[in-house]
Image (cartoon, rainbow, N blue to C red):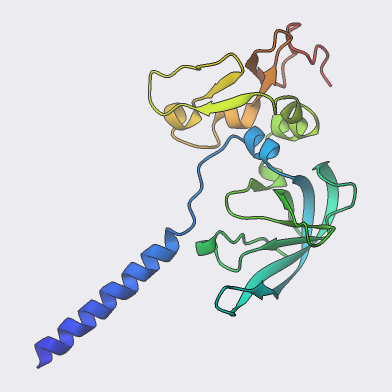
Amino acid sequence: MPFSVNGILCTLALLVLWRAEELVEACSCAPVHPQQAFCNADVVIRAKVVGEREVDSGNDIYGNPIKRIQYEVKQIKMFKGPTQDIESVFTAPVSAVCGVTLDATGKKEYLISGLCKAEASGSMHVTLCDYIMPWDSLSTTQKKSLSQRYQMGCDCKIVRCPSLPCEISAPEECLWTDLMIEKQVHGRQANHYACVKRADGSCSWYRGVAPPKKEFLDAEDP
């Protein structure tokens, strides 16, 4: 009999671990270059988070309430988005379903990218798959590119290098090799380069701290 009880307990333990693993793996995001994140987003802002509360956001198909975290933000600058300032940022309550945790004390500035919340003006929705970074962690080139260069490259396509050797398949592509060569998402190309369209319609990496070459459309450093 004790053997049977132990067997049941082991089975229950395995089930609990399996469910925990399933929840941890529920949110999965493909790595993207900051420029791709900018171009994919509806809204990109620099802001401080000054408040946080849990709110109901309708019901699921079974009638259960859907919980969301609502962050109150003080927008410092909008790089992309509507004319109205963003005042609220909504996200899922836990990271297992891609919820984002932000410091709500108002002491830290963030770069926040995400989607417009159609049903509520002045608000946006974010997930772990969006590009959200402490402002102070961004490079000088990244901060500068948010104002113009990333937008200039939205017609370009940044292609991740899956294995070496790798190459582009079209002139409007830029090859992103950080993951393959440096084994990290926030490598040299992510931190210091933008993929910019040239005068002939092709795209090429451009390092913003150096004077741009004449064949780029931004012939003068903005």
